[in-house]
Length: 303
Image (cartoon, rainbow, N blue to C red):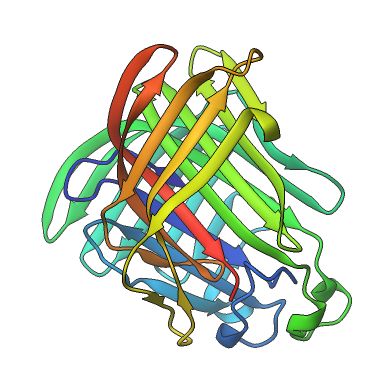
């Protein structure tokens, strides 16, 4: 679950749960096994106000309640998702932070990937509810992205950690969510495997049903420079995170019709696989109009 435009000081919300180990470089943090790879779940929750903490691991047999029909999904006492598509109640309950949201997905589906090996689907959804932080509550409402992915992993055949040399070398992933206006969401992603670009894409969703998609040569992502400090993960490994970066989307004539120049400016939360989640401010233009605001970023590069 991603909210890209929470009020200050939160800016954004990430709530990412992973069940099992993927067998992929960028997503397997093998030092957090709980029981076996198949019974290991991890949860990363945070906003710009909560700082770098709130990464947890669980044993799905002892700590989670994952109903087969999907009507109740619970990770410890930290995350509860109740309901069936398209209506859900989502509760996040961490020390100092609680969200209680009613969520209604739209009928629009975004297929970020669709294959026998990997599926990743997302729905824009309207939400309303309360955010409580530091003992103070406020009513919030808007649009979030509710997403689900599944991946075929070697741990389905052999319930042990997959040696790094045998993991699929998907070595870079970044995903951004930009709320251009109350009803328009721009989602951007770029991936590399074997050290080479695989897919760079952009998906524009409007709640009235309109959508657009651009891939590969139509979309570029470029890191302009990096933060001077390295980011250290709980296992001691480090990542260089971007400071300034640029997205460009070109039309069929090759002209740039959307440009986003971002600057990361929040603390980051660990746990999108082996990477980090944070926020940034941006300027640029879209369809001939200037744009600016704050947005959401996930950034993972394997060590």
